Length: 325
Ligand code: CP
Image 1 (tube, rainbow, N blue to C red):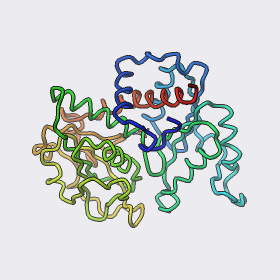
Image 2 (cartoon, protein in one colour; image 1 turned 90 degrees about the vertical axis):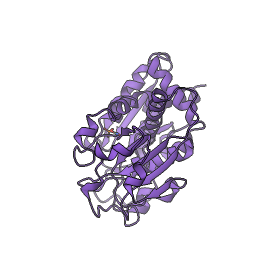
Image 3 (cartoon, helix red, strand yellow; image 1 turned 180 degrees about the horizontal axis):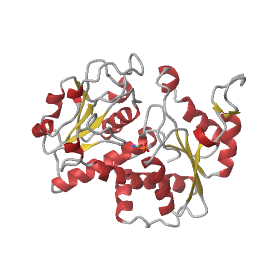
């Protein structure tokens, strides 16, 4: 793998997921692979899981990880080509990225969308400009429209869940449901886009997306899934329920209605096939998901978040192996 920006950078999802699960069994199996190498973790937005899991993953590979909170500690970056920098931005990405690329063997970056300008967000200008000017492999720690490390984690967590409940070899197609959830403010579409993109490309599930009217996601990611506004119908016989809020895509970045009836409760899970419940975290308790679900036997959220280490480690190892083969 030369970079990790989306599922399109992954030649074989099952092989990468298997590698991640091998690292879960043997975290230090490749403890010298990254020896003498450095990764720069650049954050333009807050993070708990992504930041720490990637640091742990790098340490497991013998690699040094240096975190830079660009938004708080760095100069304000300009990303527009040809910008007249007479405003608030101080340093152009054209100048900063090659310097970062000279300090590090791999760069990883987290940016969020503005949720104001759809064309700009969906052009992925920030991460594309880093790729253009850094000169080293770039890993997305979540971009304006996608969160691929989260999605790889989600696939390995789903595999673990299915393997634990069904004796191998199982031949059935699991029913995986992505359900919209209420929230108090408009959130990016990244996690939902990315989950849809990965599950569709993986192709080993019946995939249903359910959300209120007007919360359609970008078709480039959802094509292949069944989409319904009837959450009860979607949840029936589900094996996995992935809960996430997202803001509107068509009339971009809005929170139209916030019907609390969309919150996933224990009662709603009664029609599922003993579904495992997932959420990328952080989660607004008793807004997106009820306490009883998060603290109950259906919840996979802690296992899911802990799997972030193995997903990051698998991706990092592939990038290092490719660059230094
Ligand atoms: N799920 C996720 O990306 O969590 P953080 O925002 O804490 O990194």
